[in-house]
Image: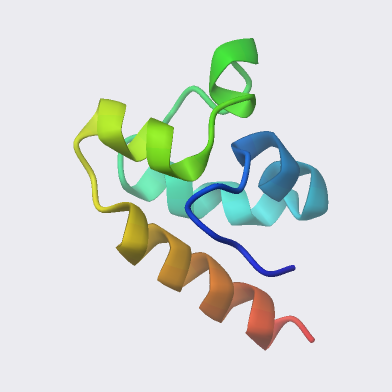
Length: 67
């Protein structure tokens, strides 16, 4: 999976539930909330005051290791 700031959080979680840990590490604990799973990574990071680029980088590194 290739992640961008426009990737919807629910799509990431559906692809690999273990990737949820990266969201939890930066304070996004509401991964089962209907609103959060429909937000893009960029939208959620803006709400939580975190760096979307850094999260995207971590997710892409994680997914590239899974191949």
